[in-house]
Length: 346
Image 1 (cartoon, rainbow, N blue to C red):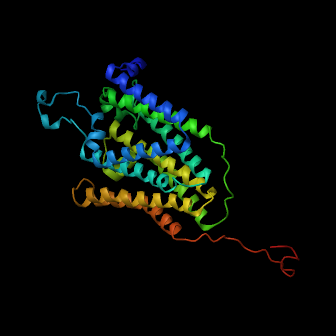
Image 2: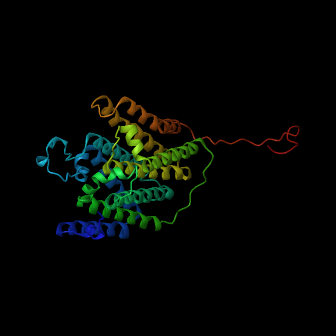
Image 3: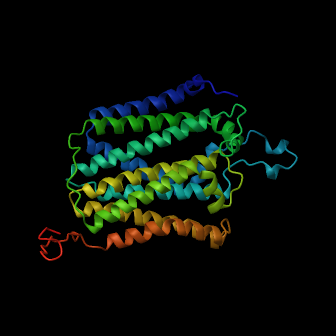
């Protein structure tokens, strides 16, 4: 069945008050507030969101899954899923870790006097919010219309449940949209878009390599979530919740790639290392819930955990080497060799 656009705007009095408050807060922060206030608010909201997904995923994301069937009316009530499964809870916690990882660079660079750092953070947030918004809208308006697709056909099972969650549709989409618009406002109001010279130093090269690794990871999570769900979590029949969480991880990985790509143009070394510190902490903390799920609760198999470790190992190794390397310029002094090069500079 198709979902009419008007269902997105059907609100009762409580919802009108809720979204009215969101719009007023948006106008105060985005239009009247300065860039520092917006970034600080962004840091607080992102930290709260990440902590909620990490600590209480059944509450923060549980409303997405509401059974359309009464368990007591079913022949086998235990087969009716009324909440998030253990693997869905694990993916929620991983998503929370990834979100918290992005807040590290924001916190470490909050007092930076380099304007390019704050502009880069705003730019990365635009990328993240745009992708998250597309994922939310897609999850709501998804209809197969008879088309059979290996990737999308398996999402139909829980799409109706997501549509019936007014909190997800209205609070999620409207909140992300306002968040995106506010970030765009402050990004376009900025004046210092230029970056400093990107010298050929080892630290910058490691940041460029990290940008490539983050970009590849983002593309994999966005384009091939079904394969990653099968290889890492052993989920052979994924549903809409699985896909939505995996695309969310891909969106935040894209934001990390934007920061790492622009970081070589930062003025101060400490701001560059802040990005590496955030990336390293994220990958290490990401392994913690997965190790618990593998060796304690048995949700993951050792082979699946090894596959995940091999995925994050290049990022960890690159960040470790870069974090402890110096900023020595890789520069070769030209020399004159009249016998070999005919008197020309090398």
